[in-house]
Image 1 (tube, rainbow, N blue to C red):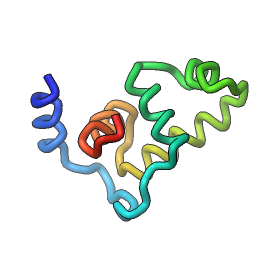
Image 2: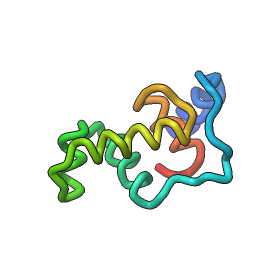
Image 3: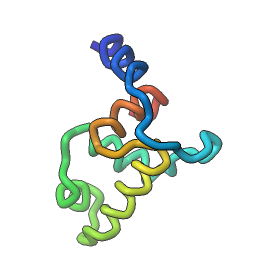
Length: 86
């Protein structure tokens, strides 16, 4: 299964330029990415993180998408797998 996902990730062309690869995800962003990989919504991520601030979670999700250079959560998870975050 992992090999299949890795093959798909290699085939996906980036939708836009990502930030320099020297800008890694923060520990908090990695946690959010892993929760995204579990299929959690922003509200569920907030609850799992012990915060009631949906705006904070939205900002963190946006930051993850931007740093990974993707437009959606599915591609973020795939890119996270490729980079070893997930």
